[in-house]
Every structure is written in C-alpha cells, then in structure tokens.
Amino acid sequence: MVSEKELKQFLKQSGIKLFSAGHIARIKSEFPLSKELDLTGIDYAISLAYPLPEYALSGIQDKPTLLYKHIYRQVNNLLDRITLQIAVWLEEQGARAIPIPASQIIDWEKNLAHLSHRQVASHLGLGFYGRNNLLIIPGFGARTRLATVLTDMELYIPGGITEKNSGCGNCNLCALVCPVKAIHTGPEDFDRKACFARVKEFEKLRGIGVGICGICVKACPAKKTSAHSEPGK
Image 1 (cartoon, one colour):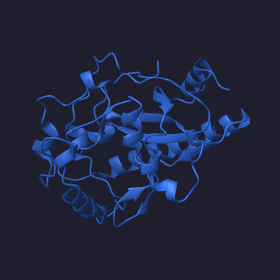
Image 2: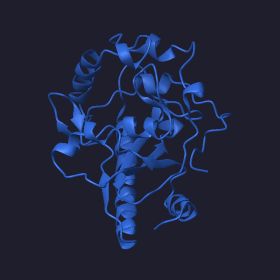
Image 3: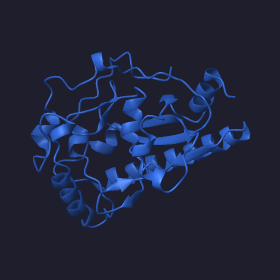
C-alpha cells in the first residue's frame, strides 16, 4: 500500500506538480479500454497534468506552428515515460497498474482514445471542462497535457475543483478565436465534428503531421493567482 505522502513525493520527484487521485469505478465502464481489457478491481486512477510553456504557444495565430507541434509531442512523450514509471513503481508495491498514453487514438472515425483523460481529471477534481471542451486548470487554463494511470490500489489525493468553483464564467476568448466557430456556451454544445475536421486539415500542413490546433489553447487565460495551481499539494 502506498501512502498519500509517498505518492506525492514520487510524482514531484518525477517533475509532476499537477495531479489528483481517487475512485473512478463509477465512470470506468465508459472507457473504450473497458471493451479491450477486464478492468475488474481497477477502481482508482491517478490523473497527471504537465503545463505547456508559454513560448510553445506564442507564435500561434491562425494555425499550429512547428514549434508548438514539437513541444506538444515532447510533453506527451514525457508524460508517457512518467506514467510508465508510476505503473512499474505501483506494481513493485504489489498493485496492478495500467499507464494510459497521453495521446493515442484507437478509433479514428469517432476520434476515441483508450479513455478520456479530461473525463478522469474532471472526475477527480484536477480541473473542469471549459467552454472549449478542454480541461481547464485554474492557474494554467487549457495549457496542459494530460495522462492517466489506472490501478487497483486505493489512492486518494483530492483535486482543488468543486462544482462551486468551476466554470468559465463570462470569459469567451476561445469562442472568439475559433476558426470554425465550434465553441459556444459549453462542452454540451461544442461542435466536435467541426473542430476535428479543421484539426485534420492542420495535420496536412507541411511538417505538422499530427492532429493539433492550439488556437483556443493559446486564447485561454492562464492566471497565476489561483489557490488550485497545485491540486496535488
């Protein structure tokens, strides 16, 4: 059994400052992974976030840049390495653990991954779904990449988000800059098809080759004054 203190120490030594952990049995049946693997007993998860540096986004105007593409992929690679290390560490403690890649599509027609990192993160209070359908972490906006470790080890590290302090309020900066007008009042009326179609167009740009955009990510305010800028603290 790993204590909360030990998990926090391991994560912070790995360079992860944004994290939460807890019970996910209620939502795991919604994971596409549940059709591939038997998740019986895998009722807990660790949600990790890593911030994108400001310079990675600064050059984005109406399309993703090569620098953004490079940093985006490097952060994903970093998260994949760390989630693997966490899973191995948990297994050494006698637990079962499944590291879920930061960005890996398993169904291109439906644009589905093994699970939604945003769903897990919001369920565990790490952040909330923003108007742009991305995870918003106060203090960082939408400017993070996410990964998840599933496990059967009982772990609880509360995030800083509750229903009372979540939501974009009157901010609609992402909606104003979206090139396909996919963003409206919230995730419930977000136009996924329009967004995905434009991302596929960007993917064809010379040197890009991955499904990214970054326009609304850059527009999302990252106010550094939030008390929840380190949810796992």
